[in-house]
Length: 508
Image (tube, rainbow, N blue to C red; front, side, top):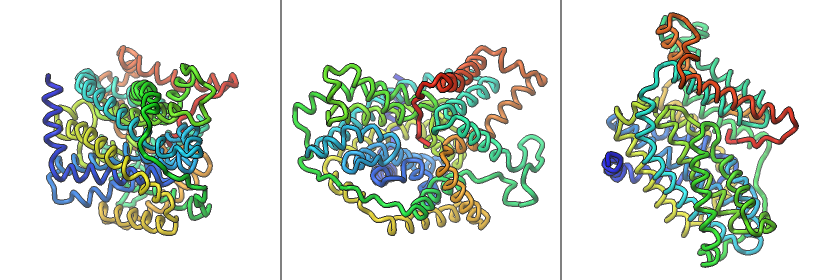
């Protein structure tokens, strides 16, 4: 009953006019971010952190954090909705988790069934969003209570698992993902040492004493990196846009898609809970499962409705599932949740087991707002499909100046520091170079966010054990996390050595 009570309080917070407005802005921008090929949820969320900081400037810190995170989470799951639009109409995924939708979605569009495909994608995403929210509401409190029993050794091992999970499944090369993880951890050591107060890697630059500002690095790597890529590669999307006909699906299509939606929602949620797995893997698994259990597997890839319903449900459910390790354990499972975690820390709110004790309004307000946001998305997506389809045709010459302006003004407004503008440009160039050479950016962001916490927990554990490293192996929970982390890295590596194809999560 406690959960129902807290959830009702959460709805009280989420239904405040300011939070309804922020949820609406979030899902609207999220859908547009998903529709615009190349931007993706990570760039969208990173870009909007400084904007939300400016919008909530005069508010109480807890209220500002709640409103900001409601908007940013809206961008995250809104992008999952929007990504299907380009997959179906243009055969170009709006973001990585919509890759699988192109297989049957575009075929349906070529057959004149684009409206049905888009409607089923929206309905599937809505149902999945509700399933993941029920799971989130039921599991969040019990998990955070279990996590409260963790000591520094358990936390250190858990964070190692989070890093191993994202490093083991990010990008096309495990070596490159490992390099990026270590690079992120190295960057996190810049600044004053919390324990001794000694300056590390600051080179007598006062701006570096506080460490690298997470926001500047994230906006530079993702938003500006994408801008440089578009300019230097002269990218444009000139594909033929499929016509959107009748929007509402037929009764037969609804009947055929009900099973895939239910199975995709459940599978996606549980895959999303695993750190590092993410929405891309969830959509792949869901599609493979539907094809395996289907009585007519030969129809897959030729325009079957199940091939749209299953992956679209799975990727939305996974985005809800990924919130569980973030909110209850303080472990971001993907690049986007790492950026959300960085945003919360900016407001002095630490995600993890104490979040539900210290800031219940923020935690439950966010969970309730996701329900409201999903309803808004369904209402927005069904009638406005044709409007969102037009967004695809936005020329880069209009889009690029807007992204640059938001990046520069946003970062400067938060920090009011010219050093951060120089760092922003350096990170933008680095983001372009790294992404162009297949280095995944998610492990770097995760290393930067988790680095200080890994270091602090390791030091606390070693202080308590008088410098004995065996403390990490003597505690059963800590040992279990370390074993899982090692397996997470070793198993894909062994499979690759044997010549097997490893399914990779490119949610960089």
